[in-house]
Structures are given as structure tokens and as C-alpha cells.
Amino acid sequence: MKLKIFSTLKKGRKVAAGLGILNLPTSGKQRILKDTLNRFGEFFTVAPDAITAHTVDGDVTFRICQAPGRHCLTCGEKLPGFGSTAQDDAANIAACGAHIAEHEAAGDKVSRSKRWPHGYMVLASSYLCEVLPSDLANEKMAQKGGLLHD
Ligand SMILES: [Zn+2]
Image (cartoon, rainbow, N blue to C red; front, side, top):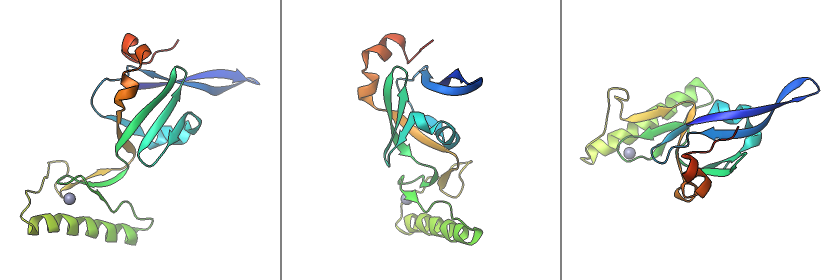
């Protein structure tokens, strides 16, 4: 999935005028960067469980699977996120470790990976999302295999 920002000239300056989505995937999870939302906030609505992209071809809603922060690999639960100070963060990391220890104590098979050996994943700068099926059913997108505007 690629986002395209259409721009226009306003008083000799290039300004963002619209958002397009190229190659909207029909399945799988997509990452939406926090940076994109910060830079082009006028084209997105962020709710606790969804991000809606207001594109030149209509709205596309992404269900948020995982927001930036820490997530347990075993049960998927959102764990304490990033602290505003190093001390807060250390406390949050300890709480994450305690959560994993609870799984171990309960006899759960704790999921770990090479990348996330502590048993939880850290999404620092992006939202992991999937497109809502109702938006995939949108005829225009089905025809084009994605939103495309030129
Ligand atoms: Zn868990």
C-alpha cells in the first residue's frame, strides 16, 4: 500500500490538496506510520479502534489491530506503553515482564521470537491495521484493485 499526496500551488507554495491510496491490498495487515498521521492529519480521522483515510476517491477505514506501544505475543494484550520519562519507561518494561511471567506461572506456552525475545513486540512508530471488509467491497476499489487517482 502506498499513500500519495496530491498537491496544489497556493500563493506560489506547494500545499497538500488530497490523499490517494495506491494498491490498496485486499488482505493482510498494513502499517500506517505515526509520522504520516502527524504530517497529513487533515486527511485522517483517528479513533481508538480505527483510522479513516479521507481519500480523493472516498473514505477508507482501517481497523487498528495494534496501536503503537508494547503487545504481548502470547495473548495479544496491549501492555504498558512508553513512559514519558526513563523512570516511567523502566516501570512499564517491568510491568511487561511481569505480564509474561504470569503466563509462565500459569503454564502458558509463551510466544517469543528472535526479534522479540522478551515475549512482547514493540511498535514504536506505526499502527498495524487491516482494511474493513465493507470498504474492500467498494465497487470502485474492486475494479481497480485499489484506489487510484491521477
Ligand atoms: Zn499476554
